[in-house]
Length: 298
Image (tube, rainbow, N blue to C red; front, side):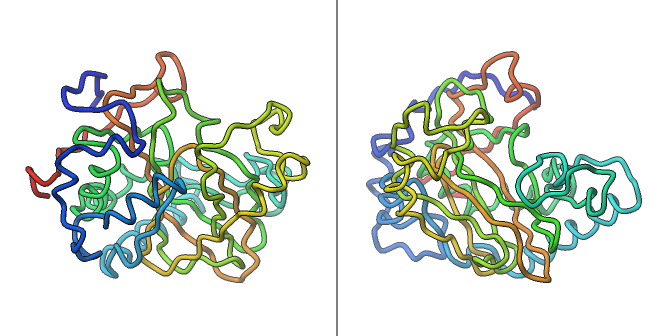
């Protein structure tokens, strides 16, 4: 479904002022296994640009997602045409130089996860996700299919390092106001390529010379050292979920273990923050998520 920019109830800001009066009525005593963030988690998101919810996705849903992931990887191995990104295509440190050489067809991302199996739709519509996104984005929000909407894979031996960046370097929307949701299907550690994030970096301003020609943040730049020193490893257990702002600096190393790592990543935006016409961000349809709030329970 293509979604237009009209949204009668949306706000333009995902900062602290975006929280509507209804949120103030949500009890600070709500358990973390409910549909909602604690107020302290919302405050952390606005302060740090990210927050983590432990054990948000149960074993049955994770198992179904892993099965769909293994099926997708097997289809690639059989030569089936499927939306995929290979490590060799991004040319990041550690990746093979070309698809033709050894390891060149190592999968980095299985794209278009939403269309691969109904389990991913189940996750997008899960009450524990919808309620939390309502708290951060407001009552009307949309899932772009052009960005993320994927299973990220970190394979042994041929995975790559991803430098410090903001996701907005890839994207073109009216405002830099989107949230990505990163679900660990297995353990994510510093050894198998977990994300690192820099708290508060979503509010930081950089000089142009702190970025390279691809808008990666130059970690060795003298002006960048203090910020990089604040980095935090986002280690996850299976079912843990990271919510992070599109301006939060993040990076990841390659996978140094013998086992693959799989993560499901989706991105969401306020309905009144449409993509810029004619850009990659506007190239695909989007999903309008039904309202889920304290007046309209999930």
